[in-house]
Amino acid sequence: MGYKCFKYGKLGLLFYILFISCNNSGDLTLGSNFIDNTTRIFQVDTFNVELSTVKVDSIITSLNEEALVGYCEDGELGKITATYFTQISLPVSRTLSEEDEYDSITIVMPYNDYFYGDTTVKQKVDIFLLTEKMTLVDDYYYNTNELEYENTPIGSHEFEPRPIRDSLIEFRIDDALGEDLFNKLLYEEEEVQTNEEFQEYIYGLAIVCDNNQSSSIIGFSRSGISLRLYSAKIEESEFNYYEQTIYEFNCNGYHFNKVESDRSGTVLEQISDQDESLSSNLTNDKTYIQAGTGILTKVKFPYLNSILFDSDNITLSAELIIKPANESYEGEFPDNLSAYLTYDNNNFDIYNTDNILSTSEFVLDEMYHENTYYTFDITEYIGVQISNGYFDNDLGLLLTIPSPNFSSTVERLIVSAEQDPDKRPILKITYLEN
Image 1: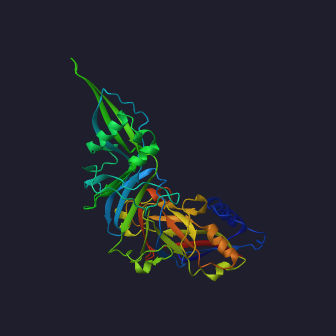
Image 2: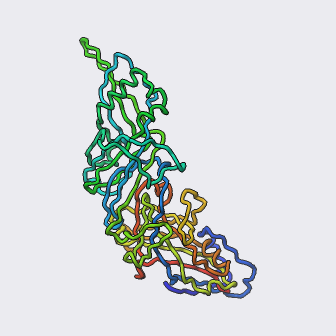
Image 3: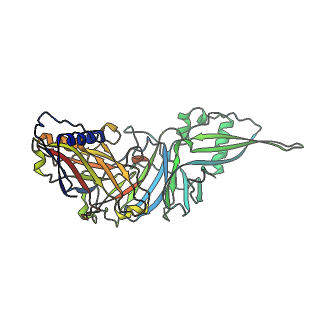
């Protein structure tokens, strides 16, 4: 489109202004100086848009209602591993009698419909007992935290994930643990009197995926994960009466996900500290966004035309448009993105929704994959800079997967930074010139 100029009479201008003001969230102030018979409206979309990739130091994962478990190799973003750590709590009802007999113990993991990667490949999970107590130090656990656990698992299960078709997975774990818990409940031993005492006896669980084969990362419902202790009452009679009781050790209390990414051999291998930005010039004219691992795209506008700072001009709208790189079509697209204001240190607070500058709209070209894009209304952001009389080059925008998905999934988007007219990022500004 480049640079366009329109002439409107007063009536045409009025209708245009009404249209713009009804379709943009930014405030519109006309002033009182429209006294000419005609006013020119300009639309410019040839500004330079500079993209880079940023990695945040850590993400809070102890507030999530989702548990991620799995391993996946992504050719663009590296080898991604998700491990889940959780405390377990005593059953609400635990009235065993001498007539009860131990039957078995299992772990139950309900799906929450989320997955990333190839679910046609079998996945193996191992369940370990923690050897380290879960104790909060800084109020939260983060995706970079880790706890020690035993060398030998108490249970393992190989399965083909079916997060959409099935409701849960359940598999048997170590009977030695099950019999020990059964006896402690039966004889009301000290370790099972309160949750505090129980969590001194069993610190918790680590749910770990075998990373010998790339498969998928699966989402489970945190509140539904539990150990199930099955007991039975058997009466040997004419009818061989059998009654089974289930005692649920729910995964309440402290919990978090460790999500790590080995980016060796990828264009993002050199990215490290949060205050560093890796230019798209160094990543094959692409930038990256991924939840869970803390990868963001940074946007800057280094050379805005000085004509916009003319005091007689009025900004009607400012729109940022970004387009996915071809590699993004290999998976699902995020439904939308959030834009946060940041400075050169790349700090931002994703957990405070008041800090969101703009939430994108998303247009998907399912047929031709040529006109898919995310668009952000940044009228207020650009307008404030113009009203100040200069553009602060220390400012930028961070584009990310919105919360809560930012900490509870590994959704990703690869953004095109090519200068091809059909793929380049665009800043489109419409303004009045008197």
